[in-house]
Length: 142
Image 1 (cartoon, one colour):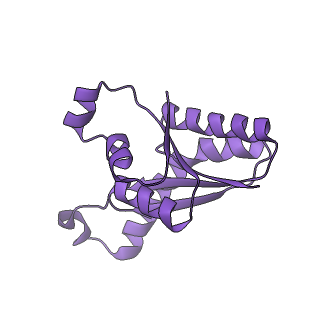
Image 2 (image 1 turned 30 degrees about the vertical axis):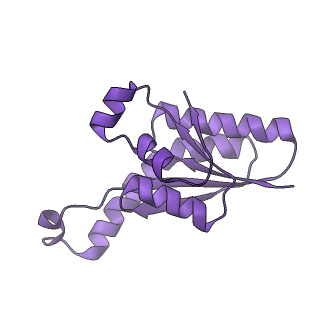
């Protein structure tokens, strides 16, 4: 039986700990896993995009996404695990939840950044929003 994981990657140490968790979990289970690495880039403001062409905007998002995903990809390659990497643009929480739902993921794995509950709510934490929006189980790794 295969398990599917969406790992939300922002390039931070906590998101890389989420990758480490999935690597260990996959090894412990000894069964194949479908792994989706997902990075969500915020859209650029209209004040910016009206002065540059779409290709430049796409290149900017791709470069930023590739940078954020690089260490996670390297960890999975070193662990000899297959994965697919996806770069999305939009509201991070909604994009993550919609992707997980569309791909029938078994779990969303995210790094917790260690904010207190009050701080997370004040800052509009993506993690808090994903937990609120998702019908897919969300596992937070600290």
